[in-house]
Length: 272
Image 1 (spheres, rainbow, N blue to C red):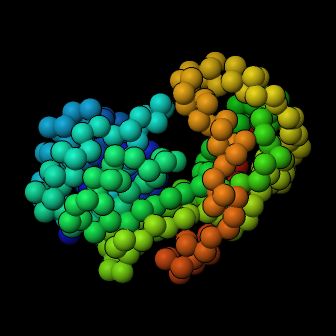
Image 2 (cartoon, rainbow, N blue to C red):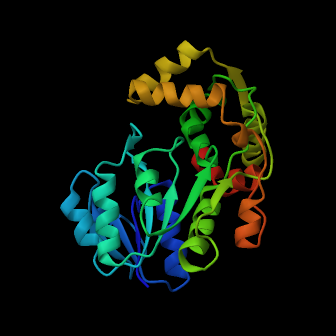
């Protein structure tokens, strides 16, 4: 059973490829630049892009399971040609698909649900790895500035999202499921900053940022306006499930979801 992973060098995709490969599952990785992918030796890495439909059709040949992003790029752009892509997957012999949620249900989900594919929705809350966006501030000033920092979230480790995807792609019993994927605790930004400081063994302080200041900071990072609005809206008023703790990671994988403190220790060097 060959499994195609789209977005194979992204936050979730890279870990999914690595975990499938470690489990001796035949895995094909789709990425724009195979030469720069940095994936494990032995992985079948193919060049492809959601804006190049022919490359997707070619990558689907011989594939029986598919991990599909529903949006891509820094602008969180919805995957185009959803119906044609799903039809091509069915024609190629794909039976199972995992769908990585991008914050709202759209044409990709609708096309898959209307097909004969066995689908599993992966609906994560905030990624713990989003905290890497604070790394430059922490290294330079020992500070984290963020808007709406007092709003609690239940961030999830992308390695846990990938682990759930592995099970859904390789085991029976997950078809039709929509897994809400969260970490094991609800945390504010100051609490996340405390965990990073503990992992570093040095002081890191939190400073509340007004929304306009946050917009200016993200514009300077080259983030598109609609993506900035999406991020700030999510921070100010996340979906109800993203402020709760769900047992999905443990239920599916058989082990507890990683804590933010564990994530911070594993990524401490990124903040030094």
